Image (cartoon, rainbow, N blue to C red; front, side, top):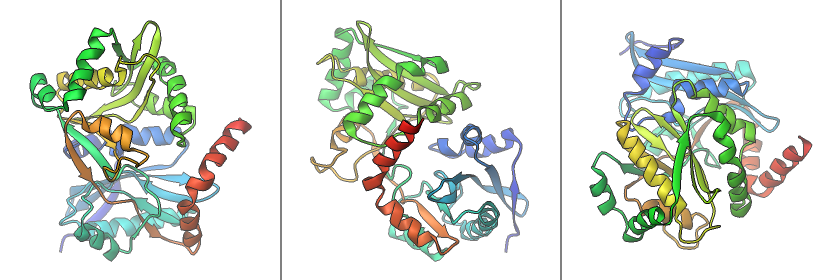
Length: 350
């Protein structure tokens, strides 16, 4: 049996050389994502799991302290070969349990990028993990392989998507991008209009700014905006990390009909990502079904028009550590009822 040890990795090069080998890349396990979490005042651990002295798995995790629940969270982690890593994950959970109790956390949460299959769900359950009542990261994602040439990518798109990209050029939609945090103001007003229109709960403004700042030194995080006649019609925050670009946060407007600014923006991101030598464009979340009345049906149809493939991963799973966990599950399960009110209340107080 292998001897398993867990160490906190303090060397960025060691961390990134291991994490970047995973394909498609896991942006939420990157070194800079951990630095972003630290900028929010959260304690962060870069954990390396070693088997007989060889680094075999990694787990970037951080504490999330709130009045409602405090827990340790690893976003899209840990990174490991799940088929053979059962003993490593059990050792990791034991290690995280100690850290959690020292930090006053009620549970540990993880949402690894592994397929949503009965076998993987049974594996997680066998380790004492329970499925969360709510999702934390996208469980159903849409990913495009951007390694083919541009003509091939265009020909694989839905006909009306291809038309929209070409029409946007004729209509004079201009797409620009920047890594300068000051250009965040080109994104935020339109994003808030989208929040109101689609009625979802965003983070506070400072959260997004600090996210960009954490990646600014490496120029890994780009702000994109499409405009015409002085009006910003679409905008997006797009990290470039490892072998992938990510359509992480986005907003658009129909102020100028038939301009198709969002189509123009995404096509420009794809072209830029190809020039940077990346292999994938991750559209992030889509609806779990193709039902036309699903709340996400519109942007799901939009994303799928560019071609690509679906990736279904397991929902977040929790490792309970206190009796209060059941009450926490109840609160999270009803968040759609009280979450928007709570967000508005916090912003009014500011």
